[in-house]
Image 1 (tube, protein in one colour):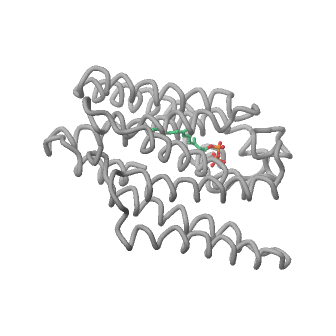
Image 2 (tube, rainbow, N blue to C red; image 1 turned 90 degrees about the vertical axis):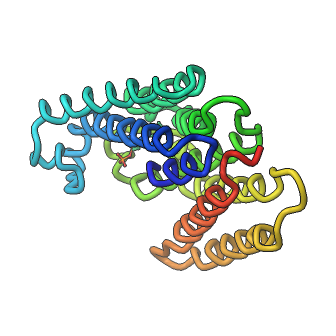
Length: 253
Ligand SMILES: CC(C)=CCC/C(C)=C/CC/C(C)=C/COP(=O)(O)OP(=O)(O)O
């Protein structure tokens, strides 16, 4: 997220220093969101034996993570204040939405909402004031963020069922969630290709049939036992979307 934010900020109207400060704010914010998530999930992560989570595995203390979380959150808020007031405020709203996810929205039918809100607001923060990015760009970022939620949750559906976490992907079930993810990454591609004014470049235009083909092949191959073809296909299209987003930039309004 921080690397994409850096690319977008550097390609925006911001000065170099302003782009670095905005990227630092995003990076600090991501750390706080991740650490808050680990703090809250530690008992559940330990229950399902998540060795990739140092807190759950006992490799680091709760106090250390709590301090790091508070410090990074404070840095994120303070660094956001160096942007235009409304833009900085939008990043703080994006952060509040992500913290709300950690604090409990993740286990509700609205679990996708914080992702749509936080990622949708990110281009508006990075653009730093008028002109704000057009609606199609905000919608594309929101769709890609929503896809990220499904992609992140799909591999953990079984663990989450064991610990009682039931977000939107759990309620929809694996097959519907996989199709929803595909629809979200494809929607992102279409918005990014056809959103900008003027005719799309041939390369941009070619990405839509390419994305459709990748998804069709992935879902067809997914019929085999223990196949991760559909998952890999949506990941690939999501990567194409990120490339499209960086190519389009946020100052093309
Ligand atoms: C711009 C901005 C602030 C964006 C952030 C948006 C957002 C809602 C981020 C949440 C990221 C997160 C903690 C995922 C892990 O959740 P999990 O507990 O479902 O999965 P896990 O098993 O990987 O921990």
